Image (tube, rainbow, N blue to C red; front, side):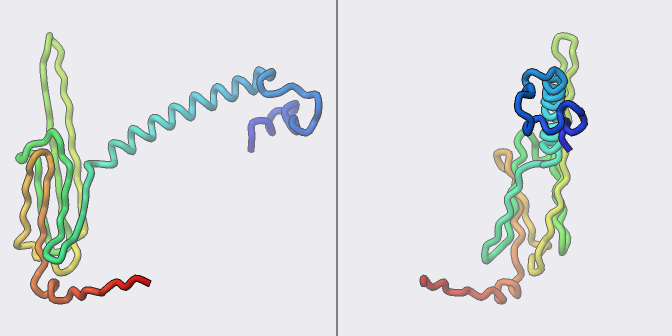
Length: 159
């Protein structure tokens, strides 16, 4: 339902010749301005929350030999990161707190995340390795010999 439908003199405005346009109607102008303010507010609020919930960028890939997980973690140190793996789940947690004082003011920031990634069958969790280099965490989950043997290549033909 449009706002015009609620105002008796705004109904069927476009169908009746000689009526004033939205620019001349002070109530319609006010409504348009209020809508703009609320749309801007909710848009900013939504984008700030979605940015917070998005977490760090994560890339997951698979080769014949292993499953690879790369997570961008700029500003964190290796002791800020915890990596756990089970037969069916890889869990990566990170938390970093930074405090600084300058000219009598204290600044404190905190960054934390928690990411759970399902691990497919055939991954050898006992041989998993993690490396943190230049702000990027790379977790390598090697496949078992049985999983490697089950892979069948399919030739692609051009048609």
